[in-house]
Length: 426
Image 1 (tube, rainbow, N blue to C red):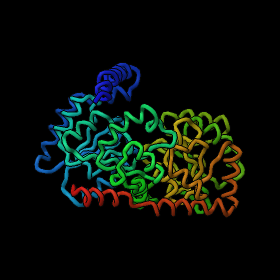
Image 2: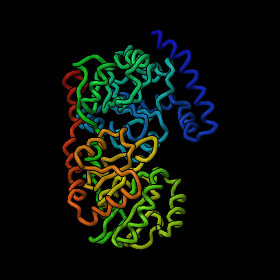
Image 3: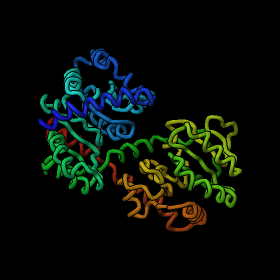
Image 4: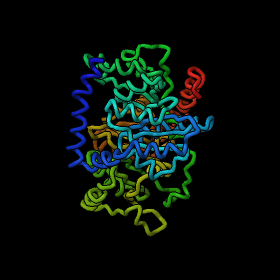
């Protein structure tokens, strides 16, 4: 209670101040702040269309966490007529649902800023039968109010990094008071489970089930139709995708790329920046190296160019189905690697830079020799060369990666089974 009092007297005013000032300089913060205006009235209005059904609340900070929740949402919708409400902290997640078709999501909303009274009003309006939080976006006031309202709270695809500060010192004491209010936690690995037990010491309320992202990636891969992607390659072509890359990645990739394109005329390259606004910068750097490129949305010829710049959102995961080799971006930067599952499920030779500790599956793939780590341009050129020249280990890595993803599917079923059988909520 002392922690909660100090949190509301000190942390929450600072958070509100940050959002107020931040909205003057950041369009994303401003969008989130504007989106929360009249949040409760919008929510009440939308819920009127679902007055006669029970509500289930899911929360995801952004797109990645939403994708982890979707397998659970889909399974619950198959079994019940519950109304599914999904809340987001980030505008990117909210907008993604707005632009893409998620038939099993009935209502999308922003999560209000973590003020006690806002949290209470939010949960009182929805009155969810239970609440599922994806991965890590945990707000003390919302958790506290949910427990007081006897709303069961589940944490899925839960992770605690080995370098986390949450389970150490004063933070351990403070976080334990929040985590202990969860009904059940579903860590992605045994290692994560061990770390969670320092904050949530209830053996019978922790179940290691894996990551629901495997389920989602697997299902999305099954639905891909290559003929609808708008690209055409010859059978002899080697397709190399640079996925979700940042400037730190391209510094190492582009020098290797020039060398590879000169030596291998059948090499076809797709470059997908993490943010489309970097397309111009990448194209300029390519021009400096005398590498011609075309943009995906401006393609005129049926046969795909040697170097293609992907300037369209929501396509990359499908394009991996055309690839032989994929570099996964973010791994030369400070924030860490992006999604390695999406190329791995298609049997690509997957590789990345040295900063991949944020990804459990990337670490597992390296251990299983289903992915490779590169440290510079020379490593990149050498690895791609080895694949093109038929090196057995490079050729087999893709199949190892594909099997790893396929065999890891099923977390969603296990979670729903626990919620259904142990807690009788479905």
